[in-house]
Length: 196
Ligand SMILES: [Zn+2]
Image (cartoon, rainbow, N blue to C red; front, side, top):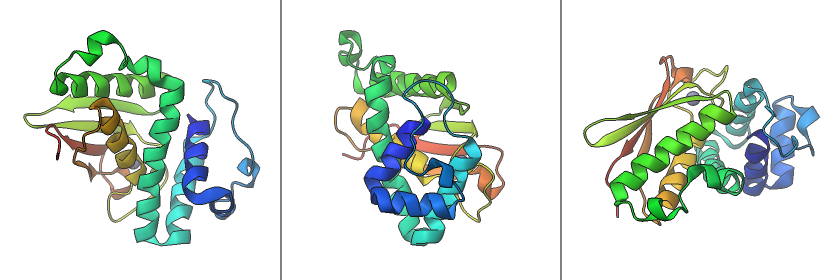
């Protein structure tokens, strides 16, 4: 998963941008290095948090926010190559499900992928008209403090996941609580009905 994160950063920032972010974060040992393509834990959460802090310092909060969102989106597509079969979304049974069930099943499978293959702890909660994607151990804001929610990467990753699971629909996805801002968990609200 750490490898996927670095590939996504490189796609969005370009290699020089990624190297600059890594330098600023004091992560010179990751420059031009990718963790091996296996399920071992590749990159410590503190390094991931530090990269996101550097991203905002380098590009400013506003542009940094947009870049983190895009990196999250890109990461889902890299992740799909590795974990696609675990999501089960190409199975015939899945394809025949009505859209709301597809979203529910697909998001639960995605949460399982994180819970089984990383130190990230995710719970999916269903409310009346939305889902809550609750991250109890969040790499994106690990050891960070912020006045506002700051896990834009997660929001982008979920937007792209929903787009893919739904076969091309856009969903409203918004972070409402963030550990970096003092909340007990990072919580992302996902509307159950698509925007389009
Ligand atoms: Zn977070």
